[in-house]
Length: 202
Ligand code: URA
Image (spheres, protein in one colour):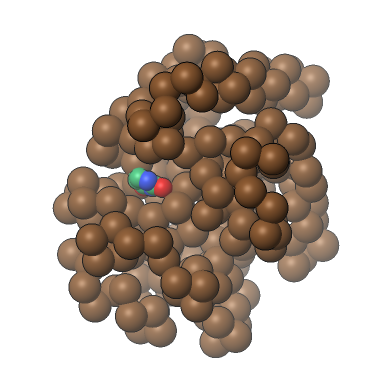
């Protein structure tokens, strides 16, 4: 992970970071994945969404959140007038699909997280949305569960001393299994919309 941090720090633009990720050989997941899944949407958009890891569809197409979870996420954001074509920048803490969609190990997470933290610094979003418990635990470096943390604003401190407001929310795959929880996710979206208006970006 130290090595990844050094490589990530040397990238000074998102394009350089993407190139560094694609060339990086320090994560074993890359060997079983078909594609590197870096990001989708608008680099520099006000909202950056960080999910967990590519699934089968994402691995095949090389883009994050293009399967059923991503389709639900797109529908939810479109309900507050936001889309990946215009207002969203989307990535994951993992750039490669874990075999059989297993939960990434802590060391796999730590390696990719070094790139993702740099990714956030370079994209400079107004707000980071953390989708699901794995992304929340990794990015916020906490053991607290998503049920406790969702909907609670926090501040993410980056290595270049910048700070960005972060909002933990349920993962769309969880919402597909537990549709009753969509009520809380809707509250999170409304809170996001409100905060964006306060920041004057909507
Ligand atoms: N789930 C994620 O966390 N990320 C994706 O890109 C797809 C599904």
